[in-house]
Image (tube, rainbow, N blue to C red; front, side):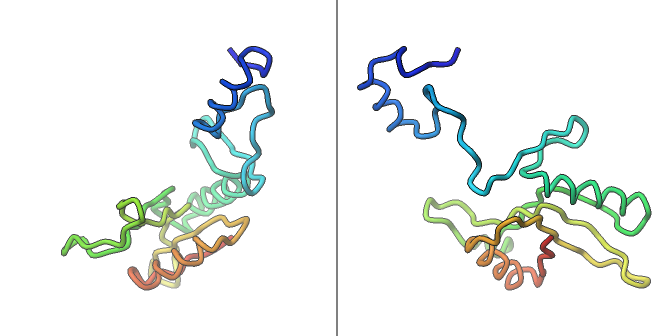
Length: 145
């Protein structure tokens, strides 16, 4: 059941909007921050954007051709030292992490090299900081597409 502005008193609607800013009462659904269109593939799951989904399909083709291997999605990298238990924390006390869209191994000559890839539509300040932290903590360069 969808509520419309006329179904509840205005004072209650205002209170609900303050307590739950994402809740829609008689208005259109919100657009995503960067106008991404989410994709739900019945076989491969959910993707945050059409761009990310297209990248994944290309990586699947490359994997089937033997050019890459061990393709994984949404891999978390925590910034810190697991041995000492010391991590970079957010203001709320959670471990700060970067979630890579894709991680895989790519063949370079006779060797296999780990690749971390991110499907970027917009390069946000948060991403730039996390990209630097990835290089500092893991020595990993993020490939942007």
